[in-house]
Length: 301
Image (cartoon, rainbow, N blue to C red; front, side):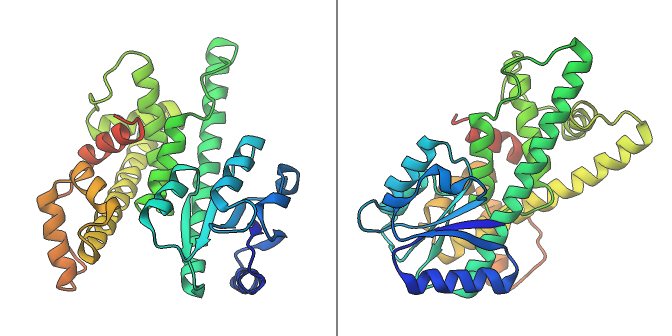
């Protein structure tokens, strides 16, 4: 990946550059001491912007708003020692995708940036799916509708939610984004958002109409593979939220998402399992409920 670093502390810039280089994550292609001297022209080939929250002149949030307005669409990773939840919340509302704490911890930096890399890979896969949809639509109607396949607000929120739930790097993440896109198309054609088809039917629709798989034998094989990927991903989200609740019962991510995406009694049981050091689980996870709730969440319902 290609990173641009906006940070007023030269020591922190040097540390981040060393970590990124030595870990093989990519390279720093540009640096700035504050947001005043950064413009969209400098970010032409940049994948990710690493940015400090508190800087003289123009702070991190103001800089993000400026660069978004100028057209930068890539992810922002905030770097700061600020622990004020309200301020961090404002940063998320204004466009940061994830967060690295100061003082800099090598393992945290590597973990966060690997997740971001996986997130970018998922986004790339979704773009490929969109191009396939365009091709299929063109073959069917002889033209591509001007507005049908633009990046939607739903898609953007889904990507952010994948990061929040700690599952952006899961193999099932691209499947989930395809499902969100498919459900949005169904809703445009008058089908209720909560009227989710049975999972096998849903997986078959995604594979047939999004991925263009028609051979029955291949379809059944891919349906099983998709089912396993999604179940593993949902279990990871389930465990991630349970871990957050175990560490801090008032964690805002835990408080908001745990009762919406899962049965809260099952979450509490998983917390007990984690506290006891049990890796396996006896919890029942309702994947269909998760997918429906995830869709309602990204739609803002």
